[in-house]
Image (cartoon, rainbow, N blue to C red; front, side):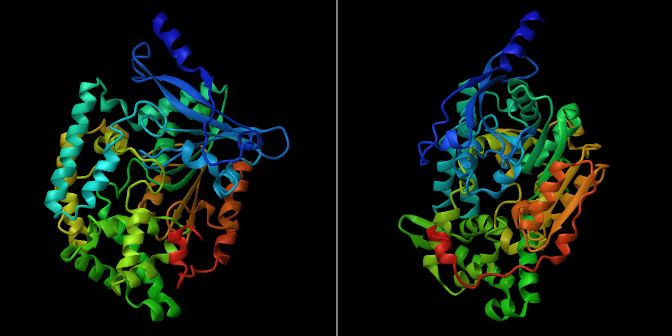
Length: 485
């Protein structure tokens, strides 16, 4: 017990290290008062004296006058997406970072197995999966090769003595507590987006004493009604875009029936893939690339235009969209091994759920095997976590919950499921937005600003009623894809 206590104390130490940022001015870290470094944690928190791993972290000093309030810990989505290197170089452009730094420090960290944090889990798997997707294979053949890639990854992890079971939401919550102790923080605020909201919710029921307030930006609760299969959520998100476009005379007149055009385009590309050098772009690959365009609240306005041009046979545009968004890393460096080590046991996907969803959205589902998820997880990370994990979270911690009406990742019902047992939660519906709508405009940002300043007070949401409807883009897509907009 004494040795375990010593090991736990050592795990809570912060070890400064150069940030090593690329493509930033020489004085960038000094200007923003950034400190990077490692926090060492047990690989298995139940055995703190056993093998340890290191987490890559960064602390950005808050803006504004002293004294500073309790810091904010940002919890990224994914899982599997790197955080520090995808956010730290963009402090001057990021509305979210600017908001969260007002009067308080901002803490970033790469979740174990992602970014620079240890352990690197099958680092070549992401590129291998992308290469498979671009071969233009039939659904069954593609699924088979993906399963083989994950099985090979699992074999390499076993050979290295790495247990994928050490990578979970609960492990990340324990990692966060180690980071908090390492930084000498008594209490902090949590700000999570997408999957990061699940981590925040689990922390609310696991380590509530250290949490002042929580912002959930597009929540994914453990009792999610949608995570059993994402197909319905994706289909519903695109259907919502179609309905809004149809309700606006200008959009309807310019683009027509967006939903029908999407179905026709996907079916055509499945039957006759586009040749792009040695690559073959199928309907599945185009949908995979179109999803990141739809999931971003700042780019969802381009979706009808993208679908219309693809439907009209603009193969050059399809190639550009796939090149920009089809690689799986459009949100930053991505570890599919870390993601599936968590998602396989923590999601409820089954073949029966997928089959039922296919009845609603047959074209989006395509010919993917109903049991594709089950067989992949059986090869890589079988089984489920303790059923108690899936219970709704009950808490009296002040919580602000955002959701967007177009979101193809975390739907409206997840937001309502999230707040069911949160006695001090405020729900913020952002119409015409997609995923992560907190930073849509001055209204949505202002709500978060006043909440973080005084989370115990009632939140004024009156500005939401005055927000104008979304203006779907009729041009500008090429500039976006070229990186000039």
